[in-house]
Length: 298
Image 1 (cartoon, rainbow, N blue to C red):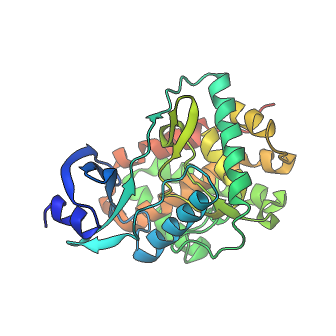
Image 2 (cartoon, rainbow, N blue to C red):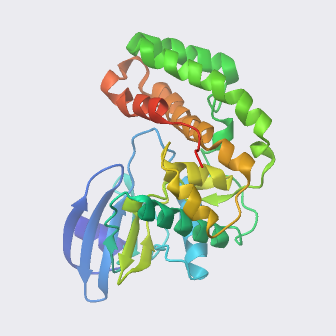
Image 3 (tube, rainbow, N blue to C red):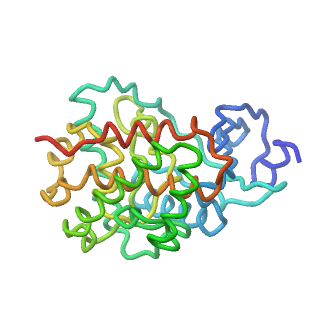
């Protein structure tokens, strides 16, 4: 099925369809008499849950955020399976991806913008967990099978890279008691963005015009979102967040542990999907994050 036909099935008669970016998801720019749109084809890497139920959860969240005036970009129609893949069409939103320089002021602004997002997300009320997801504070073990399953996955990982397996096991054992004692597991959950990062924020004339990529959104504590923006060591994010919203010391104390737990969550899934076929090069980012991450410093 051609891209033109796919766009037509999604309710728009295209004049031009142009590739923007390939990655976990693939995006095309669509020009039409009705205006500009962005076509998304959802990836199928097997690591993230991109089932119809999971995508529907994401779209419902974004639609609710947009209805409250937040600059999340809601799909024109629900996602559809076409020609063996899942597609959705989104209205084009004016703006450029943040020209992020990485200094103190930029990271403070990132934290403040995340606090603004949480203020809106907290009004959405109770929701069920996104299918295929769970909170980061539970991710020191795989989703199914507990410690026994983790030991089997670590045995597979040792066959690929013994040092990464040792690092993962040591990390899991170190952060588990910290998360258990912190009280973070008793904190209320809200729909976090999951990757509130400069490359997912667009601005037009100095104002936030679009928040993109809710691929990792799920129910979790707000500290799980902050740890993603902090990326293991960018403490100015926390300072910027606190300029807009109160943030308890117990939440701040486990930011490094939550970030490491999120890395382990992906690692367990990666080993489950790839098994002995996993390549050492696929583990490089995991090792870098676990090694560089440190506790918050005020």
